[in-house]
Length: 199
Image (cartoon, rainbow, N blue to C red; front, side, top):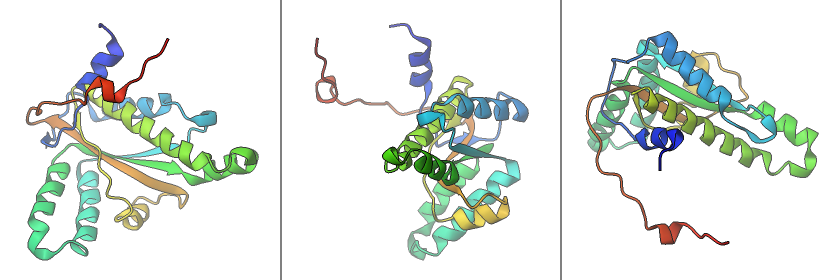
């Protein structure tokens, strides 16, 4: 089957060996990430997703906040492995922080009370779609990335550092950069387990 979207989706893989060289300029990489989030669909066209794009020292600063938070809870004798993992994320060219704006969600809950319980769930859907859209767009541009979830550990420090609105809720982090290694084989469960087709 020949399909450009499937081809792009196939290129999207978790890359943990990141470097700082990008095939795009910083401005072009920023525009790519912004457009991917902009075009990602959301329930009621809520556009609740927000992104903070960090390059260079600003990205390093973020992973420093994560390290500081983890040092408080990870046993010292096991911290070396944690530090190595964080260093691999910090080795990239940048990091995208994905947020959802709870003010947007609350406004929709008030406007459409019948669906109030669903809007937080749909907000999570919107965030996941935005994350996937950015990840796939980066992969298509030959930029490696992975998706991480260290929230809420560094949330307060990050919000203070970059003066973020109190209504923004951090949902995921995506370090990105050049491919410094290949990928392992990707395996799939049997289609008979995953799919049912009728008609």
